[in-house]
Length: 351
Image (cartoon, rainbow, N blue to C red; front, side, top):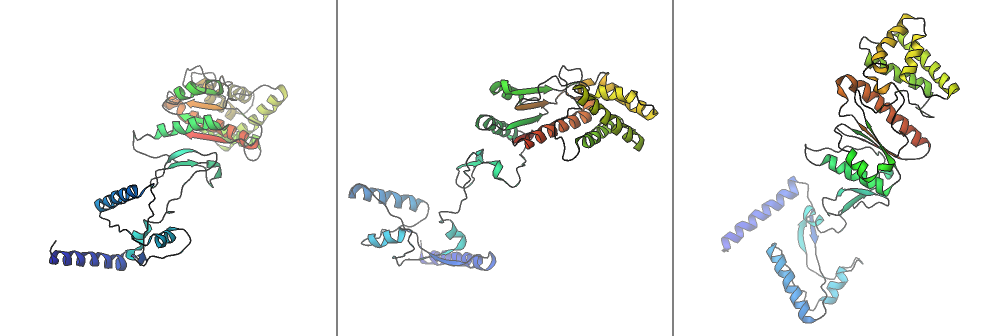
């Protein structure tokens, strides 16, 4: 390279350096990078030194051998805060930060499961969600990007490494093969569809349901359910009748030890003298004794299993609003029950 070319390159580098300091909020720092090589023999040491110099040269870096300064260089390398080498290189803070050995925060928590790879160090991320301030999360990505595969991998690790309970809302019937393949004895799969054999009781209620009075909160749920079924709306009279009948149904259930269902609620509504009660009962007929009676009877699948999968692929447009509401309430029942007995629950809702 000619002298003029060298000066031009130096001017360019100086301008870039000045731009870093003035426009990119960088600082000018003095740094020194020292390395210690060890080998079993002088020949091996010389060979390793030349190999490292060659690798550095290919990456446009210069390394120099500190002849007769081995003791000083060793003391400089040791983490005792001593510098014995008088050789500096001017660097910006951004360039100097590259050489910091502790610039990456690793996540290796006890009891953690694999959640990906550290983008900088390429080490595994093992995170225990129990230690997080907010344990909720989203998995986002383009179609075909591996979102469901990642969730299946997470579910597999939870099944094998923990005793936590798992609830899955599956809109494409893609989780059943995994669950039935690895945990058939501790799982239940609900195939929810009009005319299907599986039933899910909409009036399913566990001890400690809700945050306050369970009957009040269940009554509000049934009001929401009837509003989904009856598009004409639910007025104050209807709500009063629903609240009265809900309390009566659960009082009868406590006395007879028989699980109440929507059919039981409809029968109680038919006993009421108000015409509004007959309207509600008529609206519930399709979902109790009619062709869409999936949620009107006792559950036919074991709700006490550790893993529950709600397959809603064949739910249909008529049943979908009601079905999603009942499934959400069933999940709430289970989460509430587990929370009161100190057991963690993982809820996975696919798109």
